[in-house]
Image (tube, rainbow, N blue to C red; front, side):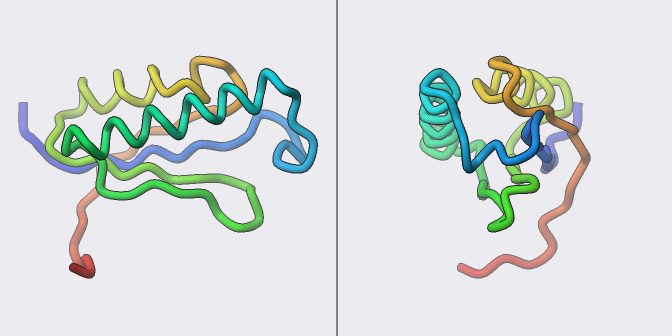
Length: 98
């Protein structure tokens, strides 16, 4: 399998999610953040972050293939915990600031 980049987009499952989270949802988001930090340390993450209007977030992966990228997305605590949905897309980082 070819190694490339992938982007997964995550979206909250309900409106106004960022304004009124339950304690359980906050814990899941903390786990999500730690999960992404671990991917960064493993050399799998290029960047991750939410839109400021909280409508969606993105995670860009590299040094992976489609099967692994799908597994990473599906194991994201925010998706596994069903507070976010995810969509995976092949992606190419064409320009990046050092």
